[in-house]
Length: 134
Image 1 (cartoon, rainbow, N blue to C red):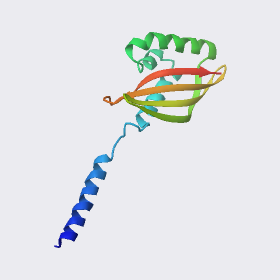
Image 2: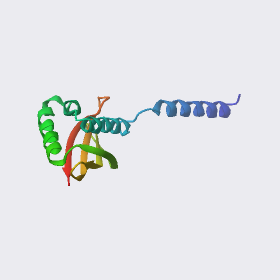
Image 3: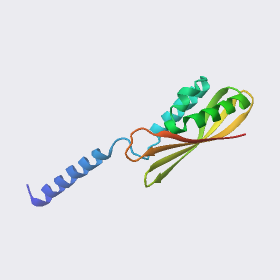
Image 4: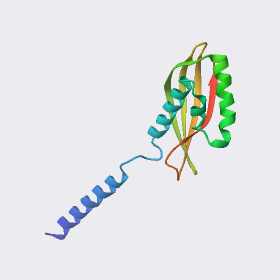
């Protein structure tokens, strides 16, 4: 085998190895965040606010539970939800996933902004922020 042919073969094999090593979930892949978002809204829809707020950091759970209770009292039960838009913002410490949600409650329609954060060294993202606009 000539040197040129051996070099080409080695180059192709190296490219295959490098490409294969890159396959998998990227830190900027929003599948994990979208799954967490769906779980969050399903918990709210089921009326299980304790389970919904368990997706926030422990220190923030009382604040977010109060927020969800106020939402529930003023908007009624969540009937349906749908992701309208998703953005990914990579920062030094991790990735922010920002979702715009169309939500239908008993009493009102709402647009909601949900921010989910995934730290660089963590596999599972967590809820960071929730805003409701009527």
